[in-house]
Length: 426
Image 1 (cartoon, rainbow, N blue to C red):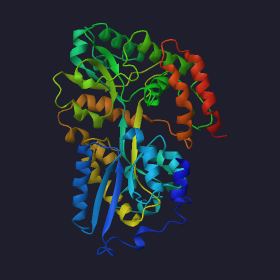
Image 2: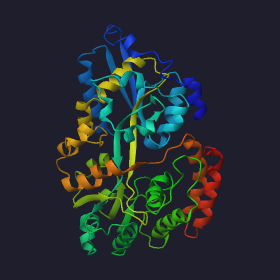
Image 3: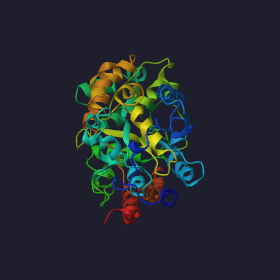
Image 4: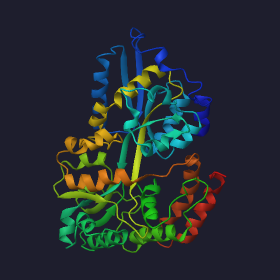
């Protein structure tokens, strides 16, 4: 993937050698037809909203058309790299947090700082430094977050009542919502029988083990790697204890849906799942009562985990000036408020204006506050690394061994650290 990105993009574009968009304005080129190819991993509802915003943009830029190309999130990075290396290159799109540093380092993304930092209408200062930190290298800025979305636990309130349990929201209010309580509740729901099970993960576990393990490991005081990206944390006692909790839930309590087993939370047979705001629309037609609560805390306290994604412009885009101009329009204050229907925003003005409540009137306002807004302010973004793609490939082979009843967790976590060692920053 890295080789494809390098070959497609050449050397990194920086503020020093970028060609300022302002020198060739969109208005000056208004007679020239331009098609903007925009990649994403979104649903039909997400594409409909982006189409609505793009049609508004076209009222003042009628020469510009848009093609929104959806790629499954599990294949997004690899398929996007292939597109960038081909003849039909996208102009802009969404970028996941995990591989972000690698794509920035490879020169795949345009530095947006020369075009945004002095734009008073865009008001870059409305974004906190922490929300932009992943996308910033020195004075360069490679993306604008369109989603700063905390992970939370969605739950079937009817099953909690059936099991005689406090709901996760009630446990959180009492200060008792821990990963140990999470495991106990999942087992209690599973023990009800009739095919019920305590928990199904956001992803197929074997496909993306990071999003299952990282929140628990961090709450226990461990993690994947340190902040400098030069030391593995997976073999620490804290990470091993966290991974053991997850493994025992799956193979001792049988309370987590196992790899390659297909169970959907919307079926009403699952107690809990880890999700984000954009997914809640899929619960519109379910017949059971549900709500959502923050991630549980651990021995190291509450460690909210935020999934972040940004809008970027690709360095190889043949329509860079138009793509940057549309990025400004898409991520302005008005349209950020529209995007908050699905994606919690990093703009302080939008978040403080109650945009999530306004665009999601059916959700519990208290849950929005505790599980989303408070977590945005206190959470950390899922781990990223310049060599994330290589680390992920190397470590995945070791973590696959965890999904067996007789797995030696300590040995697997040691092997995971050994596998990632060649790619950590020295």
